[in-house]
Amino acid sequence: MKTDLRQVDWRSLWRGLIGRDSGGTSRIVPPTGFTAQLTLLTAGAMAFLAVFALALSFATGRLADRWSQSLAQTLTIRVSAPSDEIEAQTGTVMAILKQTPGIAEARMMPVDEVEQLLTPWFGPDVPVEALPIPRLIEVTESGDDFDAEGLSLRLAAEAPGAVLDDHTRWRQPLVSAANRLRMLGIVSLALIAAAGAAMMMLAAQSSLAANGQVIRVLRLIGARDVTIAQAFVRRFTRRAAAGALGGTLLGMLGIALLPGMDQAGGFLTGLSFQGWGWLWPLLIPIVAACVGFFATRWAALRMLRAVP
Image (cartoon, rainbow, N blue to C red):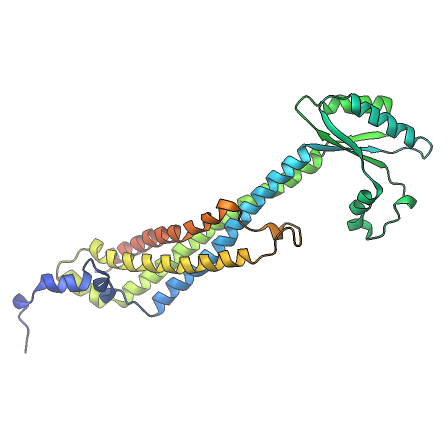
């Protein structure tokens, strides 16, 4: 028995297949299967990695600021002289520092602090007394009126064994390295977004190819390519947002479980968010949904134009 096409309620059929509700969308885009699992897994994995890349960018930014501020406000004077002259030259240096404007504090570093500085190089229990170690004086600046060049010239004239180290040659490479690490984190976020978009496009194309017969029927009843693509875009956007939300929550949990800086110290233990910074990862599912939307729409329209 043949069906008369004129007796078919094409409008009802169209609404049932690709209506505005999610039920109509699910008739075209399968809710389960390989493409659904691939989309959820890809979005979750990319969001998980994005959380750590974002934490790396924030941590290196804080590290660069901390190194820049701490090293810019302090300098060190090294006094090297024969044993019978070192006390006199050290006293001369301290007297000069008291007369120099722009200095908040100048203190002689005790033996135990010098030993801590040498421990990474010589190991514990360093015999500081037996080594020809110069006297170290830590100077803290108080304002912009401090003249490092003028102080260096005066020390060279009155205390030949004293050398001023304003940490410039040490500070700049450290700050530069931290800034490059922060840029690496930003580049990683961009690469993660690009990889996620590529996987979304592949999944959308796979789903379109699997539903080629349905697409042909929809075209026969007057459906436009843009309208057909909306069904795939809607479903894949939801999958991307759901998968990214799960990956983001797992990433935030992993960041929260890292040891704190007061427990172990070091750079990697500072790989975390602070204060309102914990709200930034919550933007990842929104960005993932946007990436899924535009990537799926572009892939769907491109493939639909190629299909006769």
